[in-house]
Image (cartoon, rainbow, N blue to C red; front, side, top):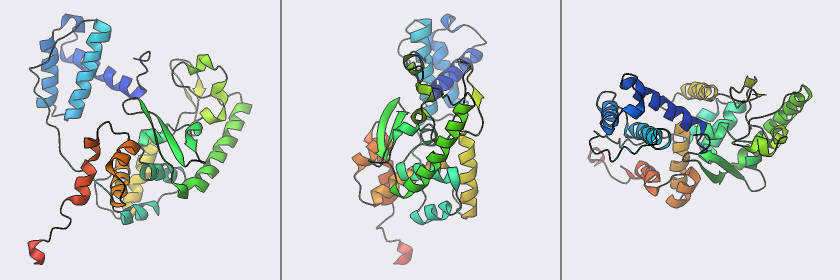
Length: 305
């Protein structure tokens, strides 16, 4: 999977599903199993585990990869799977006033990261994986590398956070200089770049924009480096801010991304532009935000008649 440039999260997910498939079939080797075993497993996920359609599709993709690339056998068309129902839920979205209230209770790095979720439409993982080189202050742009679907895209950088972001990156620069003096300061480069450019992992522009306080050791290479801060750090601070703002919604970090798209629509931006900023494959995915701003609006309730 690494030779195919699959992301770490995809590798982790595929490995998990392949393990579950093996356990489900009483630890028999996948080469001994037939397409009926695949169908039973995927049906079990939908009927017994009640997983979502996207989760079932992810498990299917993992097993197709397994048989095509590892077992080296075609399993044929899977026509007997009970498909999980695709939900048609409208995402939770903050109002503009709610966003302002939430940001009153955020500060430091959590505020900067949440500003990128709402101001640039980034997913939490995308914001935390940002490298210094992918922030363009001159063009007010952010390049999102290896996003969902292993695609790159460009989105907007909010001008209001530029002074605070520059101040933060200056602190990261000074910390990086201190790390280099101590014989550290390297970072993990994507794919084979570490071999192609042996000293690039020391360059400041390759460092994570939001590095962790502690060093970790990479299991594969033995490299000791600063990874980015953990997602739970931001999620916890945002939950606290939502609670302090007295907002009674089942919200998460992804709600800020939903709010980014919805508020852009309300401000008159066209759906295709928003689709590109979000990195959606299909405009149909982006269209869900039109339902949020259109449903019920302009309809006079009979109670008000």
